[in-house]
Image (cartoon, rainbow, N blue to C red; front, side, top):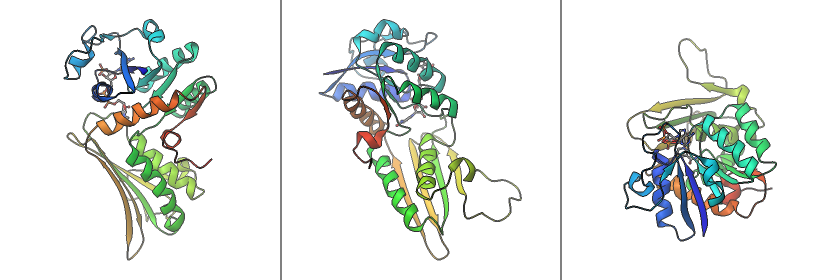
Length: 269
Ligand SMILES: NC(=O)c1ccc[n+]([C@@H]2O[C@H](COP(=O)([O-])OP(=O)(O)OC[C@H]3O[C@@H](n4cnc5c(N)ncnc54)[C@H](OP(=O)(O)O)[C@@H]3O)[C@@H](O)[C@H]2O)c1
């Protein structure tokens, strides 16, 4: 049985992860973390998630629980994840990171930590989205050179980063397949007189509304036809199940930075 700690236990994903642990025969919830100002410290993780008591209190001290967990699953905010990464590196602890919105520098710090501990970093843990990433590679190679490529994503009103980490990853996959650099060809939103569209750009549009769990569409549009590849998540449990699958997979690794394509065996190395 793999013992996991969940950072961000009282958040939307945290609650979903607690529920997924309760349903799992391979993974057990050994610790639940929130920040030191959290109003739910000391409360039972199961009750926080709307379930029955599980006997795991919400705590704020990662150092104190390090020895009782095998993997830390982190769905918090970039700054707090970075703090957890630093501690995990010192303690040789494996991590599964679902947090999104890292700067390039923060990402580099995670890459460096991957030289000494095993980390899975994935902006989207769902199997469906990771299959879509493979389909995008094929679509980009087949029709990407002569079509206009636009990525539209929608999430709930509480999401703080934009575009979503998943949308950016989709953009990276398409750009890489076409030999482009997303940093120089991305267009984030349009306003005013922008002139005609440049074929070589990849456009992003963001919707934030209500309780949308997560929707992404990548459009390859030509004159006369367009191809759209879409993914719609209707429950956070899909991300939580993926994160637990990642936690099991990472136990077989000693160090390195991996993503869900590695976990699902979709990567051609
Ligand atoms: N990879 C994926 O598949 C996937 C799927 C869904 C979401 N996400 C990402 O996961 C992250 C969390 O999403 P969410 O919807 O669960 O957000 P959320 O509901 O805001 O949950 C984040 C939780 O982390 C807590 N937190 C902040 N700092 C902390 C710290 N130092 N230690 C422990 N807990 C801390 C927050 O507490 P306060 O609210 O009190 O600040 C909150 O309870 C976001 O970056 C989101 O984009 C990834």
